[in-house]
Image 1 (tube, helix red, strand yellow):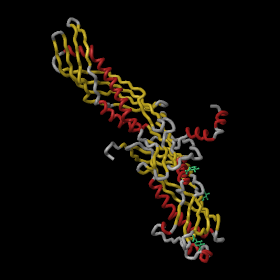
Image 2 (cartoon, helix red, strand yellow):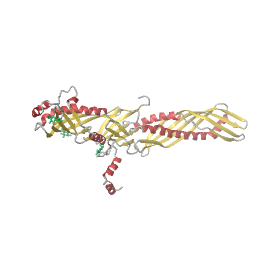
Image 3 (cartoon, helix red, strand yellow):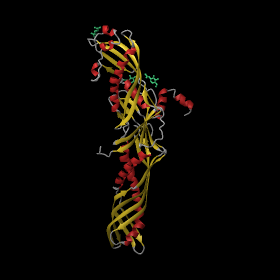
Amino acid sequence: MGAQSLAVACGALALCLALARASNPGFVVRITQAGLDYAHQHGIAALEKELAQLKLPDLSGDFRIWHVGKVQYEISRLSLSSFHLPYSQISLVPDVGLQVSISNAFAELDGNWRIKMNLIRGYGSFDLRVENVYIKIQLRLGSDTSGRPTIDTSACTTRISSVRVHFSGRFGWLYNLFYKAIESRFRKALESKVCERVSKSVRSELQPYVQTLPVTAKIDAIAGIDYSLVAPPTATAQSLDVDLKGEFFSLANRSTVPFLPLALALPPDHDRMVYFGVSSYFFNTASFVYHAAGALVFEITNSVIPKGIEFRLDTSTFSAFIPQLEEMYPHMEMKVTLSTPSAPFLNIGPDGLSLKPVVDIQTYAILPNSTLAPLFLLSLTGNVSAVIDVKSGYIVGDLKVGRLKLSLKHSDVGTFQVLMLQSIMNVLASNILLPRLNERLAEGFPLPLPDRIQLSNILVGFHQNFLLLGADVQYQPQGLR
Ligand SMILES: *[C@@H]1O[C@H](CO)[C@@H](O)[C@H](O)[C@H]1NC(C)=O
Ligand SMILES: *[C@@H]1O[C@H](CO)[C@@H](O)[C@H](O)[C@H]1NC(C)=O
Ligand SMILES: *[C@@H]1O[C@H](CO)[C@@H](O)[C@H](O)[C@H]1NC(C)=O
């Protein structure tokens, strides 16, 4: 699309938003080589078990031996007793996917043989050792229509270069027969069974597992997080990157947020198995959704003031600074409503995470008949910083408030010195409002993790417009939670 036609298309703003939305993720999961190695280790252990259960078809046929005549043979009950995959590695194939290369694998099998030749008949058992088995598996990653990851086998080859057989009994010429007539058929059968089993395991074990990634995480009564993939995962030479939408949405009324995610340029860090790039977009959609749902309105009365805080919310307290309250509303309890006129916008930079919310503080006197009489409306601004951590797979936060600045927007009780209210408002904000917010933030928001994954060695870093979380991964096998 040329610049001109793009401009035309973008005349329709919705389309333009859709185009930009399709390109930038709000959340990136990066799996490094260390992470792939860890996954590989578990995958190989599982594959070893799978391959040890291989069943091979019976082989029968005839073979002409000079001077002797036609020999009819049958090989049956071929089964594996073990399959060992001692050397293997997983590597990234840029723009393609992943490749697993297994070398020098070996397997042990046994089975029965039976032959017929003129009047001679014979049967017995044998065992086999298959060595120098090379298996190469290519895995292709994608995403389905619901934005869940997919994985399948795009190519698989198995090559067996050595088969050693041992027959019970004294039939020396059987070896001859085996290597001349049977070995190559047997090898082909085993080679194709190995790849068949690999594809089947990827389809029936790995694919359902990667699909446990919670692409829509419901987090509370108000919001969910959309972690659907915006594109198929991409392999680079260093990592596997998975771009996710990474946006909060209202459970009641999903609507489009009026801003877009900026591009995330993740640094080339690779000490940890996995990194999460969390765009400021992610946090700002949270702010937008909770604000739109009215969840950022806080009502404070005496009944919600925590025990241990020496503070009475009544006109007697305030009349020390606003003497006229004493006459207008003597000895009445008060109510304070804190709300944000617009969703607070959060900023992430190398110094950390901060926001400068504007908070409206409306105060009321509660009349004896329970009617609320508005007193005054203040506007409060301040610098808030956040400490971020990861606990049990959740991003948790803790807000700290800097100095607050108050200004009067409207008064129903005449003039007064706003500056005098500073200490009262500090108590309201720091000791009453903040603990409530921090209680919610301490519960946190879930990271997009498939089943049975635990994170450790957490690292938190700040970059322009995004947060970088690094972690190592532990897979908890089923039943060991
Ligand atoms: C849903 O949200 C949109 C935009 O935020 C708003 O205009 C609309 O009234 C809301 N609908 C309901 C049922 O809340
Ligand atoms: C409550 O009392 C106030 C003042 O005494 C009066 O103006 C108001 O009308 C009363 N409201 C109701 C609902 O009775
Ligand atoms: C907030 O921080 C900015 C600088 O980042 C500073 O200029 C401003 O005065 C601070 N505001 C308050 C209320 O401390």
